[in-house]
Length: 206
Image (cartoon, rainbow, N blue to C red; front, top):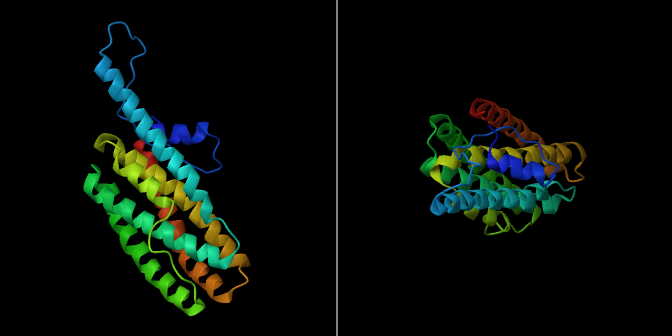
């Protein structure tokens, strides 16, 4: 069953690729004699997941840019967000495979972040101190109920990595800055590996 997050993103016609996730929420269409508290909880969960979807839609596509300096800045913020989301996954996930993936994400993106920091210093680019607009996505993700978390985390990382791969491939092929081009080309295979793993995890959640 596709996750509420994926359905919300699709309904908003966001130009991002996603796969199926999981949802433990079942809505009974027969409302006769329904418990108002149960209905309120269902609506709260739906609103929380929609909020996560909106955050992803508003932030993930910002990585796609041809300006090297803007690319470096957005990669720094996106990398911090992916690490923070994965730390949250370690605390909230109920799936050992998701936890293992989150640990890999933290290690790989922390390493890439250190390399990006060295690149920025060489190019005299001041990196942001925080996640910027990505922080909204993280706050929404932290608010998702534990039973819904795994699907939303995998969906969110999938959306971000679709854009990561597109942006890094563009820089690797077209960047006018040779250092940025080299960094993008070196990092791209790792991001492609992450994306394939995410698709594999999602396929098991259907």
